Length: 594
Image 1 (cartoon, rainbow, N blue to C red):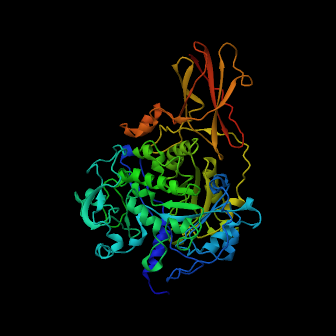
Image 2 (image 1 turned 135 degrees about the vertical axis):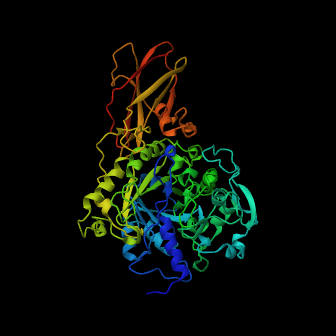
Image 3 (image 1 turned 180 degrees about the vertical axis):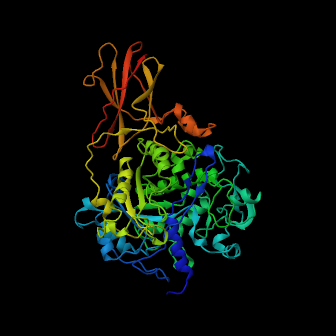
C-alpha cells in the first residue's frame, strides 16, 4: 500500500468534486427544500493511485488540428461525447478520437498538450471533418489551491491574503434569501478578516448569526468557497499554472492558449462548482462541520459575470456549465441572471442513474423528469439556447457495485444491468440530452451509449409543460399542447403564447395562420418559423407566493405577430418540429379578431 500523501488526497478530492451530484432539491421551495451533496467514487486510475510529484513538462505536439475550425459549431453538432477524469494511455486516446466531443481533467489525469492534440486530430489525421473537440475541467466556485489548508496556513500564504478585506458576505444582509438577485454588488460586503476579497463567509452568518472572518469551507472536499464575481478571482483562475507541489490546477490561459505554461490548447472549458451560488433554501438551516452547504445565492450574478468575461476573452472557445440548473428554472431568482446566450453547453449529472451504491435509480429522478427537465429544455431550445449533455453512473461511490448492475456491461463483457443502463440512456435521450455512462470515478471509458443509441429520429416532438400540478411529490404533468393564448395587442398584431415540447433533437416551433373567411387548410395557411422571447411573467414566477403553482398561468414562450389585417378574424395553430424535420400534428387553434 502506498503511503499517504497530501497530493494523492488532493487528486481524490478533485475527482470527487468534479463528478459530484452537487445539490438536489428534495422537495420544492414551498415545502422547505434541502440540498444534499455527494462526492464521486474513489479515484482509481489503471488500478493504482495517481503518482504525486512535479508536473510533467510540455511535449511538442505540432500545430493545433482545430486551429482554423469552428469548434463551437462542432460542439453544437456533436451527436455523442465521452468524459474521463483519468490518465490517458494510448488505448484511451485511440478510443476518445472516435468521439466528436471529449471532456478531460488536465490536473487529475496529468494531461499533456501532446495527448490533447492527438485526440483532436480524430481517427483520420488528414481529414478535419472527423476532428474531436476537447474541453478541459476547471473549478470556479471553490479554490482548489486551498485543499486541506487550515485558516492559519492560509493567512501565512500570500496567495490567499490578497487585499486582506475578505472574506465577504451577502450585501443584502441576513435573511435576504429569495429576493431579487439583480443589482447586487457583485463583490459583497467585506469582513476584514485578513483574507483575499473573493472568499465567502455567508455560512457563518447563517449558522453563527454573524461573520467570523474565516473563509467558508466545503467539508466534503476540503476547499474554500469563492465569489466568482470578484475580478481578482478571475485573474487568479486565468493566470494560475499547474503545480502539483502547491496543488494548483492549470488556469484558463494555460488550458486555452498554446503558449502559457503547458499551452494545453483545449478547445474550451468545463466549468464546475457553479453550485456555490445555489439558492439558500437548498441548504435551509443546515449547520454542520461535516455536511456541505452554501448560503451564497447572492453571488449568482457574479458567476454569470465570470462566464460573460470568459466569453469576451475567448470568443471562439466552447463554454460548458456543469449543473447550476437553478439558473434555468423560473421558480428561482437566479433565472433573471442566467448565462443563457453565453454558454454553449449545459450539463446534467445523475438524471436517472446516480452514484449511490445503495439504490439503482436516483430517488430524485421523478423530480428531474417531471419538474426540472421541461424547464431546462425550454431554455436550451430558445434561439439563444444551448446543447445539453447528461451523465449517468453505472456504479456507486468508491466504485461499489450498484444492485443488479455489472459495470463491465458497459464494455460488452457482461449483460447484468443491460436493461437498466439502456433505460438510463433512453430517459435522457427522449428529453433532448446527449448522454454518457461511466463509473463514479469518471474514468471508465466505454462505447456503451454509442453502441446502443440510434441517431435516426422519425418521431415528432411530444408536448410537455413547465407547469406540473403534481409537483410534490413529483408525478407526470399534463401536457399543454400547441397554442395556449392569443391576444390582440394592437391593430394588425397579436401576441401568442405556448409551452414546451421535447424531442431527442432540438425543437423549434411553427405558426400556421389563416383568416377565418375560409375553412382552415394547413396546405394554404401562412407558415412562420417562430423566434420566441420569454413569456410574459415567466421571469417573475420566483417572486410568487407559490412559484410552482404560479406556472399554471404563464408560459415559457411568446411572440408578437405583426402585419396582419386589422379587423379581420384569424385562426392560429402552433406546432413543434425537430431538427430532423418531424412535425407534430396537433390541430388546436385559437380564433382572434384583430
